Image (cartoon, rainbow, N blue to C red; front, side):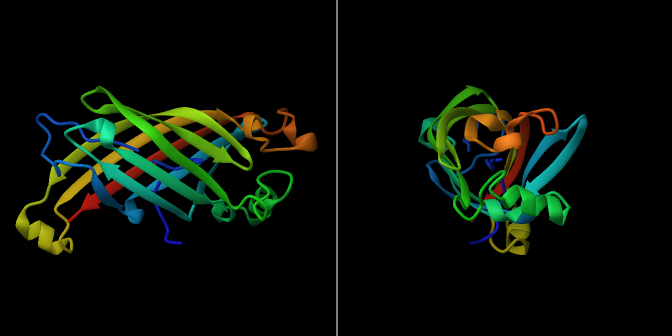
Length: 208
């Protein structure tokens, strides 16, 4: 599986469309864009008692379609490897992969698949879709912000291996881990680990 992003996330990441106007034009139809892994991230934060613990998922795949002229044609599919969870602490990461939390062997992936995309302002979108964690699937609305989009001049495009268009996006989403049975038995309690998980995704995509 190739590494990717950007949710959890969960999640990854993240789905979107391109605003027209005074931004540089991109391709005029929904086509596949490539994600720049070096400038993409799927990060999360959850509180241990009162202290935020931050982590990321290092291994994921994303299929991203953009349509700058008609945002509703855009779509995104994300598949995140649970085993790639990384909080910078091996003991904690192994615990998160265990049956107490994600059950990584039984449920190896977190997925998001958009069912629609709508534009709500010149640079903001909502991607509605199905988020699956373990054996639970719920419809969510993922808010997307377009950070920028540009066409590269020919000399720079050549330097970048033929890339002609670059776009960047970000999203933030909060979910309740208990809705997806993440944390069972005593770990379902929220005294030690909070119920709320904050997901932040940044995504840079390009097209030749």
